[in-house]
Length: 585
Image 1 (cartoon, rainbow, N blue to C red):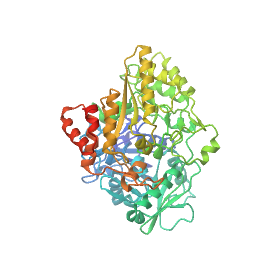
Image 2: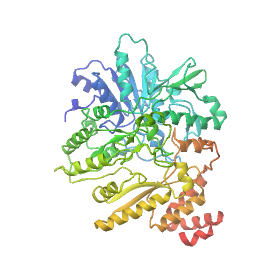
Image 3: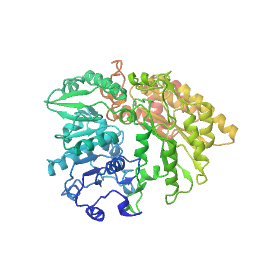
Image 4: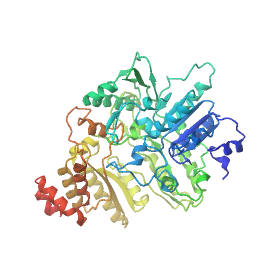
């Protein structure tokens, strides 16, 4: 593999290509991995396919003399920023606001290679150095902070990231279509100034828009939590609606304007993105270093984008969309062939999946009904009658991959929605595509909490567990079901956690995959956490806010550890549930 097979990252690499000018310079908070699972590489390759000269500066040093921001000079069209594959604050801090000791998107997992509030930090430097060069921001951090949002780490409402970054344009969601349109418009000599009418973009206007939905202003939201909760419903519904309207929100003397999103990508469009000439490798500058996030996905294949599960705490539908955009079988098989040629490939695919592994090619039977639908979930509180939940195309992919002579085993490592299964698919999955442990996410045992999470009743998990065990017995397998659970989610009380501990113990689980709820921008759960209200009913919701309340809930995950027994016993007596002591301890 040659250095010129990657997007250039240094002046020397520009010279190797014979370039004396760059059209777009992209700054990324992640290490540069030339792979379709990493947004900076996707946007870089997309721009390259439009005939542009593109350079990428991964993890620039923001502390010193800003030499990383100056080394490639000024681009002909614009600068672009992505904080990386995660919000930088989620990347840096735990649910208890403790600084993490590692970073999966950095060579050797080294922490401290990107700043807090990465997008804004990079943007301020660029605006200081090159105030006259247009700046475009995107990626998960910018996307989820496009309007007034609650920031858990500073414990306050923040205005749109456009305000603090002073960016000329924000691209939200999956950025290929808007960035292609932006380039076409900028290349058109008739275009005056920087375009602000491109779908799936946001910008700051100095005059009030004459159309669209007016959201409560940033200042109103600061004074009234109910106003902020009401805003969320508008934002979520318009994010999930194909025939969406423009949104605008006053902030100070200006107006943040969010244009409606593009329709979901067609199979041809998503194929074009995945078929770009990725090397599928980290940049050679990281030789002899391990990037943990890359190691996780290097032998995996993403079959589709989007998720119609609508989980309250998840940002997938807000970023990738509710509607599924699936790749063609031909594109998937071409990628698997490329993976098979990679160094160290031993014949095992770690994942044939997606945001939810079992939604490939699923869509509405009558798409005209989907055009008008505002439901955040197609399967909760019950499966939509218009959903065509056909597992045939996905099973065909599995069978075709299994038949390849160079594939020994293809696993499904992504999470599976057990409330969306056919018996044929479930049996195939369990007997042929589990690596010994199957991940599922019941999240809680309380149906009241699960309704707030937009997850199925716990009885559905219990039914699936029985089926999983039955198939394993029949097939002579000894596989494990690994459930994920969350503590301190809005609506969850200490008593709910005590009951969760008892129920999971009765099912013979000693929980491993657990987490304390972390509020992240632009999710329903976060709005409930901050406001104490359900945005769809405006009814009060209990919230565990203090460190003590959170730890009181979390400890019930670990009832089987001796060091927790005394504290759990004390808590059970405090909430008058001594009846659970014998069952649990």
